[in-house]
Length: 452
Ligand SMILES: Nc1ncnc2c1ncn2[C@@H]1O[C@H](COP(=O)(O)OP(=O)(O)OP(=O)(O)O)[C@@H](O)[C@H]1O
Ligand SMILES: [Mg+2]
Image (cartoon, rainbow, N blue to C red; front, side):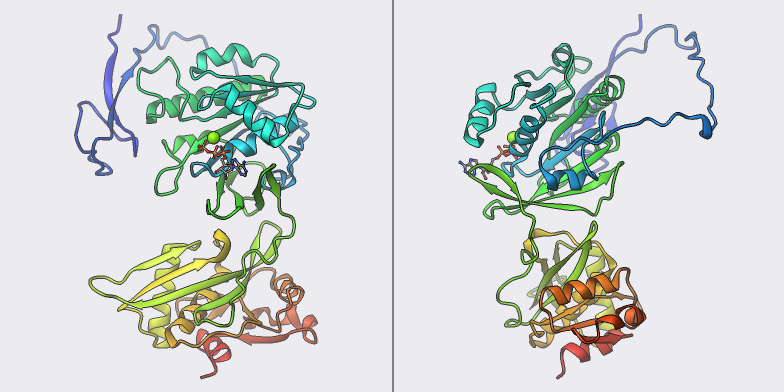
């Protein structure tokens, strides 16, 4: 019989090594190598009977009919792409105490009104979950709780369940591996096992995932690969507002966001969040500007705030919150080279209000103008909004849905909007309602919002 051997696997990056190392050679982290047993390969490899599966022409593949199930929380349904897809795996990551268990308890109780839902509480005891349900006023006939951490022991309880909640994937383990729960190997194996169960039995899984200090999901990357949908639940813990956004969705757009408020009675969806990403002090301080940004099929007005401070020593810092670091580096270089705004000896801090993440290229112009305003020390008018993509030559390129963006500016009471010249024709219809300034270069845009 083949002997079982072991290898060492890095808890942080998943690199493997045949012997223990104090420092992972791949990611450089200390004390992260954990021993993992490699199960001996089953004997008789190569003698497996063939499965007799033949390729099928696309036209003959039967289309599976599925109906999305409403979770009872409209914001969650929107983020999922219109409801829960049966047999899918949904991973929800988020900081400690942000409200992952609260969200899923609410979803579970809504779904359990009609169908069997199993809540596997691996982190808490059943009575703790019960306590939460009582506080939130939740009760449902088909809501089952199971306090179990071994996946093999969970399996028999899955019979008849349509929805299963695993809280959390870091707390469960499988007997197939000897390493501790939460290690890279365990998470990978558990995720694969859950996927097999989901696809074979048509059970929908909601899985809670912890995040690392850097904000990424803890565990190996395959955890995200095997999931159908990966959601992040985020927000400032001191603040009551929470954002739910999707970073991967096999059944819908990843642009949609859901806004919730944490209340005594649990998470309540916030429908009207138009003013949530704007501050009251707009127009008073230099370095702030508002941009209409597209998230899913909604346009939200988001305020960008920047701060520039002279570098005390060493390299200048670039600290973007809510926008991409590389984007900020490129845009500071464009400002420096094309508009003569030297930022090489300045620390740059930038923040998208309300904790929203902005990924669109249309926010480029807002970032540049906010930085220019902060550098010059001149505030941008509170009634002005801007959008447009900035090229490396300092030109302003057109963006999608310009007319809808201008329309949102009008609805939110803005008096003036700076747009790319390319988008001018599509926005002509709003001429009487708002002052439209069309620009083709960054320099023109700076002159339009900072007259001096
Ligand atoms: N009585 C209460 N009134 C209002 N909010 C409460 C109350 N009790 C708890 N909360 C909120 O619920 C949050 C905890 O929610 P929950 O346990 O769902 O978080 P979690 O993301 O599952 O955390 P963990 O990572 O520890 O499992 C608290 O941080 C708090 O904001
Ligand atoms: Mg929890």
